[in-house]
Length: 406
Ligand code: C2E
Ligand code: CA
Ligand code: CA
Image (tube, protein in one colour):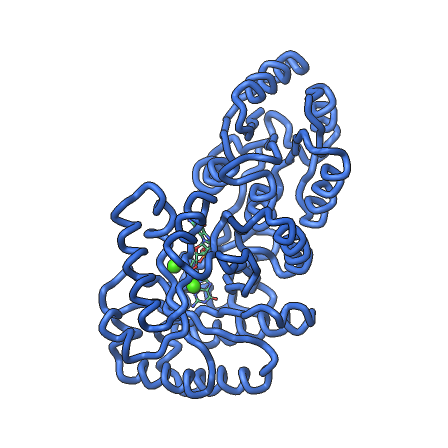
């Protein structure tokens, strides 16, 4: 049985391993360990999720530096890890454990239970055995990656298959929630998710980009209309460079903005030679700006093409690419790039968003550098629409207690 144990204390991990082996001597355990939430998320995301045998149990501590149990819960809730049985362990009081239990249940995770430290491993194992979803030794669940190719992308692209997640952006100084970025997935019934790195190039190649972005707009705006409270927060939608070449699309966005004037819409444009240097694209950007639709320059830093355009195009926001942000606390070169981008943005009166914030240490560094807004797994992975309000309420409560801001 493949088990991932996440706890910042080595002796707790060792105890769990030895006691599990004692409680269930007939089971062949394959233990994997992480000493913080971020490492566990990385393991779940990169290595172990596709590797067989699949992980059959995650045992995670609640309170840890560098990504706590809630970060793991949030991550699992929005990824393929959702099905993995999860046992939360903590030395918090019973009321806190109950709250965590209800948050986890509201995310429809496969929760084995929330257990108080000092741990009674036999209690955890009994709950695991009673949990029907735990795959048996020889019954590995093999995730079927849905087929998505040029031939079937047109038929896959419809409202029913489009599945939007929303990733929060926070004000670094106050910890306040300021908005969300819409991130698309295709969800094929019974087959699972297809991620944008796979389907966006196919959509672009097939010339379906405007049709696709319209679907994204419709679904995201409907979500924002479901709850009045969501209108406090900006809604950022990614636009592809090719979208800017269609007058029909540009007018569609402007109409949507006019008819949903109570929603703080923002467009995220990827920084590319194609976007910035074509006259038609510049005109489209100007048209959006004239119509009070703010533009964010995405993936800033990936190419140098935009530095000379920054002063001529009144972008509202630049998003520093996550490649420069994720390791900024240990990579001095990246730190220098981020620092000079922030200084430049300040001169131009443009807000700076750092994406890919995975740790408290990076968030603190960004705060010291004067960066305005942060987005990343440390705050939350992208959240499914149906859990958005629960997440917001929980975040706002936590932020009032100053848990998230630094
Ligand atoms: P992006 O606009 O740069 O979006 C950020 C990507 O980074 C997202 O990947 C997000 O899930 C991921 N991410 C967020 N926080 C972290 C973090 O802390 N660490 C790391 N390592 N990654 C993080 P995702 O959702 O797979 O999207 C990939 C790209 O696909 C997006 O990059 C965006 O360019 C594109 N995309 C997504 N949705 C849409 C859409 O509706 N329309 C268009 N045109 N493009 C989209
Ligand atoms: Ca983006
Ligand atoms: Ca990016």
